[in-house]
Image (cartoon, one colour):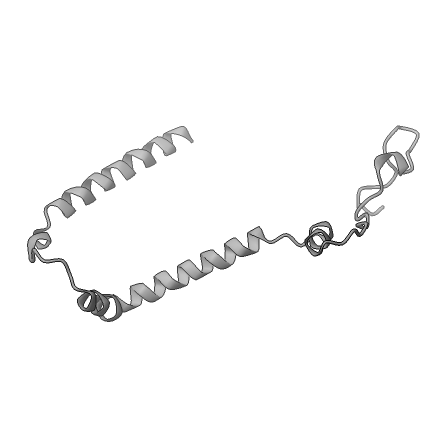
Length: 116
């Protein structure tokens, strides 16, 4: 596993070096010495690069929807606290271990969901 990780690091480093050398050798960087105007930038984004703009917008919206889903907290205690109410939250789940019936071996009774 370490060998695969090491080879992957070497491959990524080689790829970055090749890309950097190709970008630095590109002759189109010095075509115009003037920066683009607002209208030429807008035309380039909405006309020349329209599909990339749509794809980037979709990716960013999916990331924001996913982040809002992960952040939300719908536990009853937090919902009632937000409303400023003092409500006792119900106990959900199994009863505490001390209240469960115990077998003679000291383990809780039950077969763990297995049928006999």
